[in-house]
Length: 414
Image 1 (cartoon, rainbow, N blue to C red):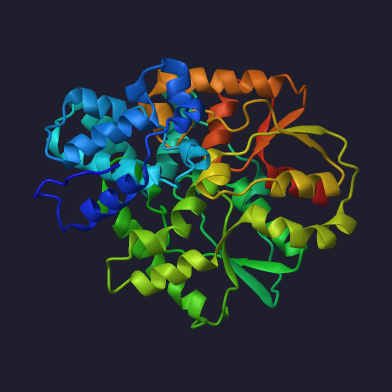
Image 2 (image 1 turned 90 degrees about the horizontal axis):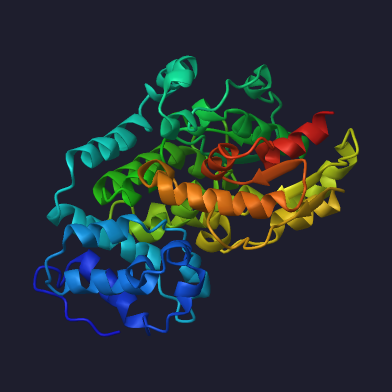
């Protein structure tokens, strides 16, 4: 697809990146068959091909409208279209560029501006945890869209962190909301790795991976988050502290993983951080990527037979963003679990970071569609690999929804 950038975008990093992406697009339409919003709405402008045209028009100088903004807002950034695309179009990067451009030119209604500001500032703030505690107390009185976002209080088990040291060490990002909402995911990760002879380290100054602000059209804010994390991690990457050198940066939230793996690309034009960002991305591994090598050490340590059937929802950020498939299923089967993916396993559950707050109607339709397929498996527990998916799915079912590492941790501890 050829495009003629307007003078405003010629020679800019964003313009050149968008032009390179658009050049790959052959407008075949394969992506529409796997786009969740196109499946729901049937509108070409609510599929990747239509959104690409809207972004192309804006970059060529056409003034965006409120309708342009709405169609881009409805995109989940699930990147299912990237898995389908035969040309390798980096749609996720293109839609982030398009959203930032449109955001600067189209004024949002006041309530939307307030909601986005609250999400960007509130979810990454030290005040998030105390606010969540108040939310748990006020949960019966909250509106439905917020009530479903408040998980129950964590158990004491969530605070149990292994104390042993090991020669093998990895660095883990705690996340911006995960320590407050579902802290047992992080501690269970540390316990499982400890059982396999790997020590988990954290850097206290690290925070949001940058995805939250980037996907809310705050590209500069997202880049600032990335730089802060690189600064926090670098001493452990280089082995400059008493803790020693880490062999990998492990992500147990697949949404963070896909973003951190792309730090090198995001900061390629920053001479102060480009090299470091490239190395950080290369060291980053999703927790599921470690599973094959963990299984031999973990299998003899299982204290009880894992008899439960598990239904597995693979987050879009894992199977489409990181292109990782099959690791969890294969490892759990080897460990003796029955685990199965549902029909339409490639489609998004509707969580998509802040999407379920900003687009609740579409998000709930996708959630209910996903839960119907998961429910058909008649499993006692649903497992996933991303806190957003877990929380969103749990809001629509009484079947327990957990991170797979929590199930594995429970099987190890008896």
